[in-house]
Image: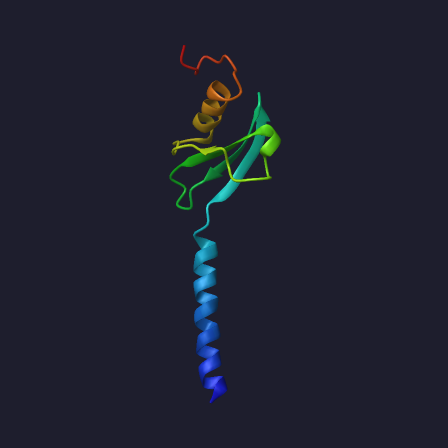
Length: 95
């Protein structure tokens, strides 16, 4: 009786946890510039990237200071970080 209930329950829980893991976004890279640190993440369906940004001293210690909107490429996301957070003067940065 217990085996008849336990096996389907464990199977269902396993399938739920596998599907949850499969849908997770993944970390592409991390770094820092100026007073900020970042993590570059790619969406699960590989359609875009986003940044999680922290004040450098709080990186890894608390939730992100901000999370950016989606970018079409990793280069676009990193240029955004360099222009708006690392205070770099690049050709891609708005004047």
